[in-house]
Image (cartoon, rainbow, N blue to C red; front, side, top):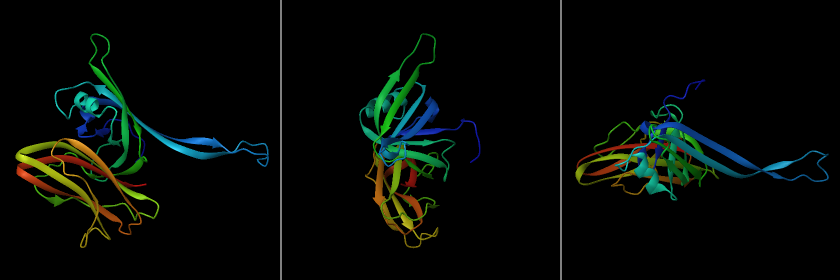
Length: 244
């Protein structure tokens, strides 16, 4: 990815796609510097990397009246932990995605008379910040049990984890439609002998989940799968995968 102008950022929190009500997205990562200077340091200050910290923030135009809109989503998630997924440029299959489990610690709305009603929100990471890929795009509706396309992430070494974030953004149908998402792996893109790596809980409402599976995992290809129940069901969801 070369230089580009921020025009197509995507932001997902919990079960909400905040892209259409956002015009600002910031993500920061910081490593604390812990001093270890001593008399053998030759007169130079020495530091070691300490605790790591992640913060996400967004803002835009305020909307309310639906669980997928910013006011409903940010208020219900305030003070709680949940997945945040940010894409600097689009959310197509294989697109770059940054995600983590974060505590929603701030929400602000309102401004001066005559202005388009704004919102601002912040969250602080409670898990590692993961640099990964979109494994299922948000605009592809699924109406029956199936699997998605595979992406090649590489093997998961010992001491690291496969991370997966899922956001269920839209649900239609009758008979209490439900979707259970999971992640499976295999040695190549044929997925001739897939292995279950991550299984999320069943979702019957707009919601988000994040999970991780420890390495080592020698398989290098991963894909989402889903089990759908209900009458005339249809789901929109986004899945992001990465190794950290």
